[in-house]
Amino acid sequence: MVMSAAPVQQKGDRMSFQQLEILEDKIKKMLAAMKSLQAENSQLIRRNDESEKTIQKLKQDLERWSRSAEEADTLQEQISAFKREREEIRTKVEGLISHIEELEAKI
View 1 (cartoon, rainbow, N blue to C red):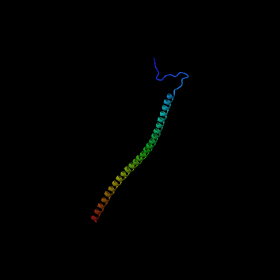
View 2: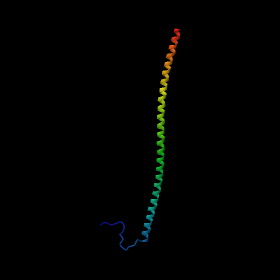
View 3: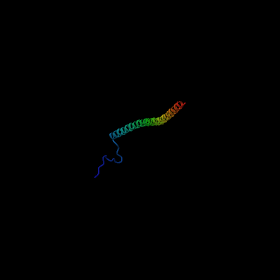
View 4: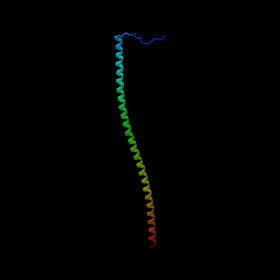
């Protein structure tokens, strides 16, 4: 035989005042819990929005730093090219000076 947890009310039975108070108390607790959850949800939404803004800012910073790093690499390549050119010019000038000195010695 299966017994139910709460007595089954027959038609015409009324809830007692104590049962109504218990039900009212449970409803109040549920409403309070619901309001608390709504407040917590709102707070979590705000935190999530703030986190998303922070993530966007960090992404922008990372992109800017990446561009700066790429620009630095490009500048380093240009500096290396200028140094090679300078050495080539220096070698040519030394050759020209040497050639001029040889010509002066023949005169």
